[in-house]
Image (cartoon, rainbow, N blue to C red; front, side, top):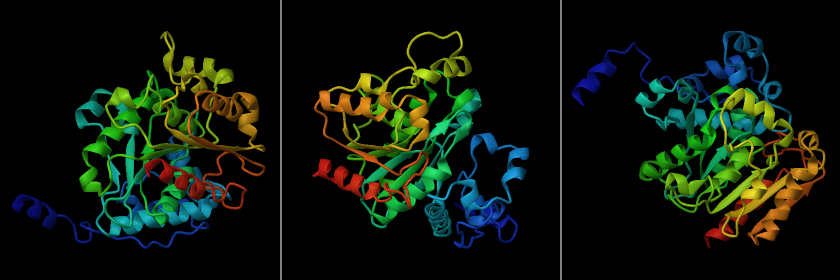
Length: 348
């Protein structure tokens, strides 16, 4: 303790706890966001991996939060970022690593992972793990993660945003390993987080929805990591079938490898009667799902859930484009409220 105190006293003035102002809006520039001490010092990830390089950072720094994300989630993202700042100012450790330093030294791709913690308003709360969407070298921790974490906080839950490995880092089912290790870390530190270690939900969007769905299966999911079965899976426009892009992912991630991978598995083929209760939705104006063959996505997943008599809710909205997160200004605007009520029914 004495050594720690001496180390703190040796730091430059203001370096111990430089607080930021929770004054971010949809029109705040990304440079202002990233220079805010509460964001910068908390370690919260505001980039996407494809933009996380000097040229990308310079290109996007004068873009507003709304321009960097989209019109549907900008307000929610701003509120989520302000919540990060408030938590940091209150002494909360926002960023956690679920891999050891030795593991990250042995595999550099594990450096591109993280867990971002949003405590609940009260102790002993239920929690949800959030998996944003990803595609190629782009991920949506800010677009879909921050706004969802903020809304879950408002609903009384604790939330964790998972930064999982994508694209060239995601070989050999690395994203599923990231979910498993993150869940082990959360379970091991449940008392510190002030959460109930069981009856949790996972919220997944797009590719994050595909991974969330697979983690709920017996074949490749939670049992392999010795963590409790999720009480509910809450899936926003999940990818069920990646048929048209499987060859691309195989060449980029697992060239020369054989056997099924997360991107070669159709979620609907892995569902069994003891699959977790599932709330899933998408929009009829979702252009990405149309490009991937609309009927292979939500409708095929719904057919599998019905065939296996899994408790579930299926919603199709007229106005819910891809990457709309909590969907402000869309038909899906209140989906998370309904989905969490469904989750609570499973825990009763």
